[in-house]
Length: 94
Image (cartoon, rainbow, N blue to C red):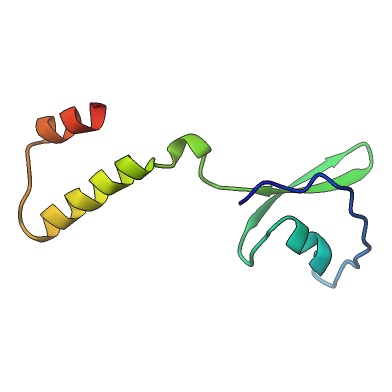
């Protein structure tokens, strides 16, 4: 998800039969949400807050060079060419 706009946006929504709340289009777009995204729900001091969340920690995301090495390794495995783990580990540590 890209950076969020910090400008205040106030809208009104209705709670449906199954406790569902529709996020108004302006708010949805301002947060750059997509269908299937996750949100954290917090209740504190009589307020309900929704915050977009990722299920993957930022530290778990591969860099471009790490991702390229993983793709290269997958290609080698699929073609039957593999290398010893110590060699791969040495390359990842660089």
